[in-house]
Image (cartoon, rainbow, N blue to C red; front, side, top):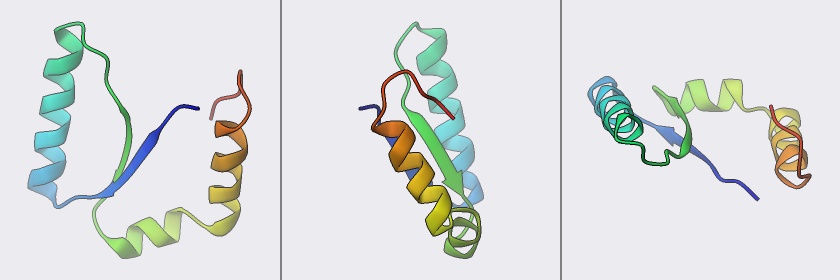
Length: 66
């Protein structure tokens, strides 16, 4: 099963995470799948129970992706 990291980051933290991931991928390193939101309100409005159910289904079945 692959891992999708879901986080809430302030703008500065989001930019830092982006820069870190960019440098890591340029160096040939593996990068984590990450989904970041600016607030809990944004997170809970985007990740509904049905969408979370879909993510769990896809994660549990090899060969599927979003």
